[in-house]
Image 1 (cartoon, rainbow, N blue to C red):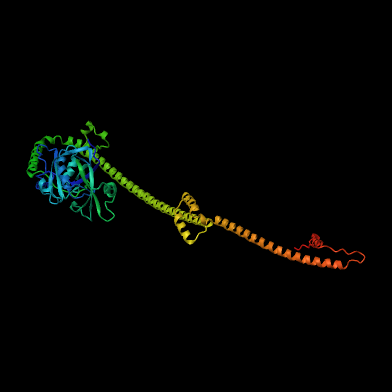
Image 2: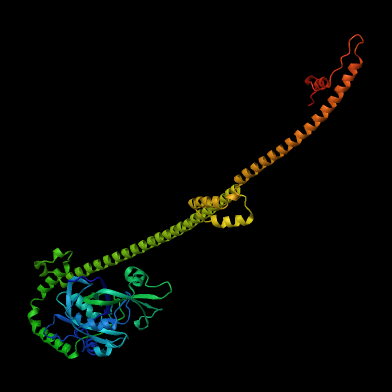
Amino acid sequence: MKKLKHTTIFSSVIRPLVSEEKDKYLAMASALDVSNFIPEIDTAKNIDLLPIAFNACVANRVNRNGDVIDTKTAVEIFESFINKPINIEHNRQRVIGTILTAGFSEFGTDTPVDKDRVANGNEPFNITLGGIVWKVVNNDLSDMIEESNDPTSEHFMKISASWELGFTDYNLLVLAGEEKNIENAIVIDDPEQIESLKENLKIFGGSGELDDGKFIYRKVINTVIPLGIGLTETPAADVKGVFVKKEEVRENLAENREINSETKNKENISQTNINNVIKEKRLAMKINSLKDITDENLKEVSASAITDFINDELQQSVDKYESDKKELKESLQAAKEVNEKIEKQEGDTRKELTNLKEDIAKLVDEKEAKEAEEKFNQRMAHMDDVYELNDEDREVIASDVKDLDDDGFETYQKKMSTLIRHKNKELLAEEVEAQEVAVAAEIKTRKGVETSETNAKQESEETEEAVAEALENAEAEASTVPVSTPAEEPTVHDKFRRAFDVDQWELKE
């Protein structure tokens, strides 16, 4: 059997074919409502069968579990209920009957309607089923089903039919307030939206409510298969119905039982004491486990003992199911809270990391900008140091070097060493020094010529003075010559020789 991905449960109040032996008035009331849905069973011959009928679900209207089927799905699957089992609380090991008929009825009035009437609309309507319960399997349960029709009974409306669906896919429906009819619903069929919103569904542990106050539900679609009916005390749908056999059938059944009873009364008188003893023994026996149900014990145990055992087992299963469901719900809620906390922490961490990255990026940008500014200033200072620049030169150079990397700047320097070589400070200094040397030499040359002329003039004047002085001295000496010494007249040559004798010169600094 193909395993379906999802399952859901719809419930309704179950109504049986009430026996006149229990209450003829209930039997008459039942006959008015179920003639179109109750299976055609001769209960006079099959007194072990209890015909039942019920509204299985309401199409186009969400149930208490937050699930719904629409008109299309209802029309496609309603006949698939036929021959499916009736069990206790969806325990497939405890089958007590089967479904035999399926149809439709109006929501609220239970008036039978045909498929053509509901097929083209989207207003709510019932899927109505009929079947039988095997009394011999659980007689006490059958009695309770019949009593559930009696408004004066403590079991009135207590037994419900809960039917289970298997399906492969679903869409989401959004409704405002307490609205349950899907004709006004917003349909969500986008897979991504469904995945993001499904945790709000009741079936997955959510509240069934969205942040905007609207409610969210699940609509089953595509492959949908009815899996059977379970009798339960916890219905999940807004459905109920009373469907029983026609009155004349019940009258015939009552008459037959009355005749049989009168025939057997006399035969049974002698057996009364024995039966009482057996009855007391049966009442005293109690089934505590499946091992107690043996062929030997079944001869002595009462049906109520088996019923009590089944009821106890059923109640334990229900209690365990409710306990497990509550525990699972609490676990899901706790996991959801932990997940939300983790997501919040992750979000905060992600936000802090983003802020940190932005701060680091900002610091890096500032550092790079500062380094670029310093490098620019260094480059401009270097160009100022190397070349004799004016403001126009600096403006052009600044525009050229501001975006250059180191290799680009090195290339630029080589190019500028050629283009503005004439502004190189070192070369300019060398030219100035050379000019200064040349000027100094020129000045020295000129000064040397002037000095020579001056010295020559001075020497000439000194020579003239020396000559004059020598001549004077020569005359004086001549006048002082002794008488006894013969006077020797010096020649002119001797006079000049003595006058220009080196010993006669006085050098001045």
